Length: 353
Image 1 (cartoon, rainbow, N blue to C red):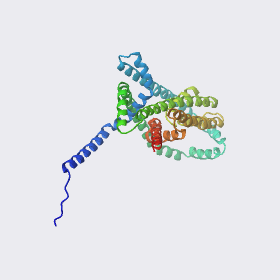
Image 2 (cartoon, helix red, strand yellow):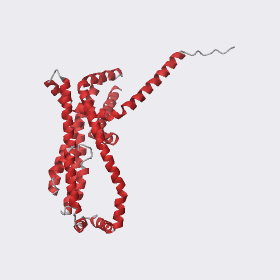
Image 3 (cartoon, rainbow, N blue to C red):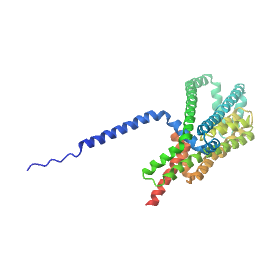
Image 4 (cartoon, rainbow, N blue to C red):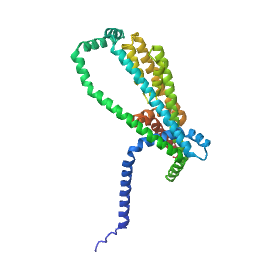
């Protein structure tokens, strides 16, 4: 009895499916390669557009028949604000640091060592090590030579970072202007796609993303103002030079998560080792910065975003820290949004079950 041969069903159809799948995968890979350089500016443009959307709506109402004028005007205003933050204060701070360097160049080493020796617990040990290093010319020279290449590399990377930041800012502002003009259509399309994928709460999720990003943006500004104010109080009490300027610089650095210590820690070191003031001025500023200024960064930001997203502050804190570690400054906005959406979907599935 001859074995019956199994029929091969639709070989042409199977080949077409395989070929179509391969073409779609290749298209997605090529799309990822093309879009990759613009992902960061695109995400920043989305954050800026969502955070300032109420301002754009108000500006558009002033010129109802000219939305392009409103979009370009608001984008230029955002650019001016970013430039006002990014350029004058660092330049002024650089001038003050240059003056500080000049003061340090004429510093009395013996007075510095005496002030350092008065610091409890660690003072005598640090004084001994620093004294040995200063009196060992060969050791000091080798220390400077070993770090010279690293300093040059750091300066090169800093210059490249400034150029990259300016480029990303320009592209983000251009993308923000485009989103002002077409944002409502994009939201409608995103809602329709989510509805086709089976989401019964597509409108809610889209609005939720906007509320999360907007709440994160407002929390960043409020936290920066609070940290700058508290740091300014600490600078004034500790006797730091130009406390108002240092407070403004701290406010700018506080826009970056965990950015404030990059200023109050060096100022504390200067007060301890180079100002001639008693050691407890610098130590007190350092304790004030760690206990008060940095705590505001962790607490206030989480509370404000939690109120905007109705998510636990603990989960918001995890989202902010994890987002920053994964995406940098963008993670402040992306991390809480991801945590909030995941929590919402989890609750929906749990209630549906």
